[in-house]
Structures are given as C-alpha cells and as structure tokens.
Length: 148
Image 1 (cartoon, one colour):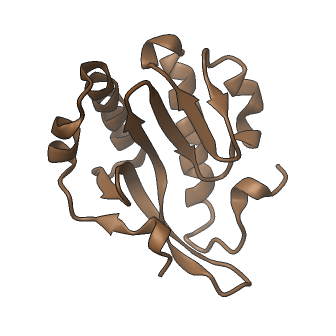
Image 2 (cartoon, one colour):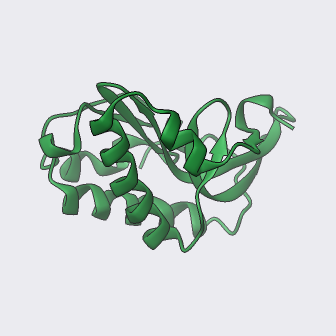
Image 3 (cartoon, helix red, strand yellow):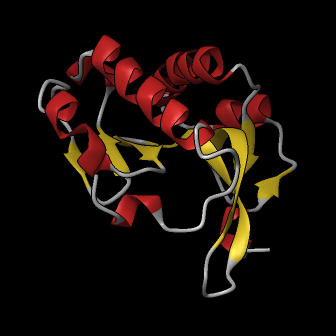
C-alpha cells in the first residue's frame, strides 16, 4: 500500500472545525457539497488533510500500487488545492474560463472560491470523476502524466 494515499480516520466535521480561517471553512463546505453531489460518496480524510471522495485502485508496471481518492481537495488558508487525478492538461479549455487559479500536473490552486466561476469548476470535477470511473478501477499508468 502506498503510504501517500492512506485514508485517515479523523472526522471530516472535526477537521473542518479545526481550520483557523472562516473563509477557508466556508469554501470547504461548498466544495464538500459539490464533490459529494458529483461522486455520490461521503467525504473522507486522506493523509494529513486532504478531503477525498470515492476511491480507485492503481497498480503500475513498476509494482507500485495503492488506493487514491477520485476527486478531492486540501484546504489551507489562502490556497485550496483541488486534485484532478487524471491531470489538468485534459481541462485546459475549461481552466481558461475558470478565473483566478494556477495549476501543476494534477493540482488546481485557488485562493478563494469567490475568485473563480463555480459552475466551470463543477464541470471540470464532473468530467475528471467520470474519466477515472471509466477506468473500471484498474489504473495501470499515472494518468496525469499521459497525453490526452
């Protein structure tokens, strides 16, 4: 099992309550509602503070295997990280319409939800979720490192 993708038994409610920034709490509650609606799954804490929804299993040719959340985010004051496990490159057109954000291979960094267009984020998350689900739980390559 890959240690970097371990679920944590901490309560999501307690974790949100422990956040020290009121706006981060409000933004997190909006994202939880959105991602739960998209996935049909309740949120779970992964690692030290990622809130993830649903799971998939991966096993690479290298022998590395584990479980990961299909969609999720990591709330921090002034920067929320939204994870697109199939990579941001798949969504360049939609990301261009999202509003104020930055990206890396599979992360979208947002300061505040008020700075983005929420329906665009929801569309991206729905597509990413469906893309991972269409793999039938058998991921054999790092999706965000592959071409579209």
